[in-house]
Image (cartoon, rainbow, N blue to C red; front, side, top):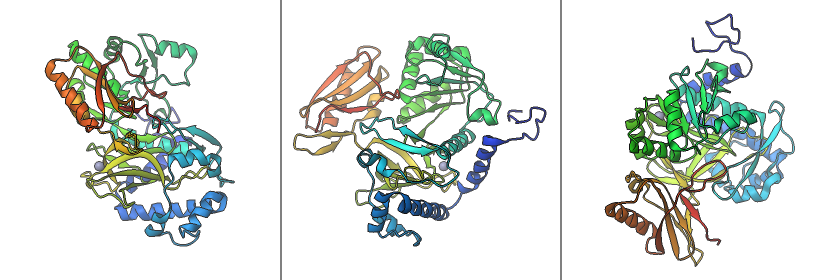
Amino acid sequence: MALRSAIPAIGFPAIFSGRAAELLALQRQYDESQFWPPDKMRSAQFAQLSLLIEHCARTVPFYADRLRRAGLAPGKRLTEAAWRRLPILTRADVGQLGEKLYASSIPAGFGPTAVAASGGSSGVPVRVRKTALDNVLWESINIREELWHRDRPEGDLVRLRGIPDDLTPEQMAAARSKDGLILPDWGHPANLFWKTGRLGLLSPKLPLAQQVAFIRKMQPAYLYTFPSYLRLIISHIRDKREKVGAMRAVFTASEQVSDELREDCLKVFGCKIVENYTSGETGYIALQCPETTNLHVQSEIALVEILNADGGACRPGEIGRVVLTPLHNFAMPLLRYEIGDEAEVAQPCSCGRGLLALKRVVGRADDYFLLANGERRRADISHYRLSGIPAIREFRLVQRSFTQIVLQIVASRALTGDELSIVENVVAKASGGLFETVIEFVPDLDRTAAGKLRAFKCEVVG
Ligand SMILES: [Zn+2]
């Protein structure tokens, strides 16, 4: 019996209490709402949004003013047109306004507040105040992700990411040693529901041979890592012709997953990659569909808009700015917050879920070259062509000056003449004739504090 009953003497049916019961009650509602037609979801979101707007008008003077100008009077029926009149809130706005976005009071039941800082990978870090209720909702979507993708909770899980900071010094030392740290279960919140398998933690800064040896030792059902680390592990396994067992799924976070990486993972580990889309300041935004590689927006907790240049909603196949409104942050409401990413809207998903489907999140909207005349040009690099060269383990495009861009490459061996000409083509195309191009081979690439690799870096200050 994989379910963990709160009363050990009762195995069936499992008894749940406290937080587990609270999270399960939400799952029960999500089970239905995920299949609602989009109109029905929209009205449920607007009903919640009306409550949030009323709260904002009463407790945040900045919004009271903004709502009035947009004609969004509290108590008046909220229409699509009125909502669209509300100006977008940028990251820079949130940075500048700071505590001016705090509500002067919070209704009962939300619990204590705390401030969360975003990863800052976009170069514009923001700090957002949240309540304990945000954790409940975060965990509820985390459990939904487990239910959608984890078919064997009793299997072991290996985590190759930054070392969590809630470990004891001894545990941290173990995670940084080649033997790794092995904990009895996956931890909160999964261990509230399931008798899970073990959790193996290993620092991804250890040599690849030690990481692969750890995976072979644990024979996990699941791996949790960044796409850039997964690419390195797969190249190592291929280069050394190592034998590794099959897994049920590889879970990744924070970076984009390419089709090539999905194929490589299927070949080497015999399993799919499961990705998600989250942000430190707003929580879960989208989860990968259980049946396709689309990302389903988590409409129960956030109103997500994908907007074209004119501010209208993107249609399937179009790429637009991601603008979102967390529906339950009453401590520091973010109304129509532009997070700095772009996403492509997918066709309605074949799985039948009504939740808006995204085909992909397209890097960061602020991945732009800065030109001497102040203009910005989208920095587009053909990831696919570079990923097609197995010796290339990591790469990053850097704008060094107004006249030069550099493609930095970490390679496992010297490139052949043919490979080099592909690389030269890719960087020439990215430059669009605007820059002198340089290819630089480097031993490694620095990462953000969260351990995320960014494929573009602009060193020019505008
Ligand atoms: Zn789907």
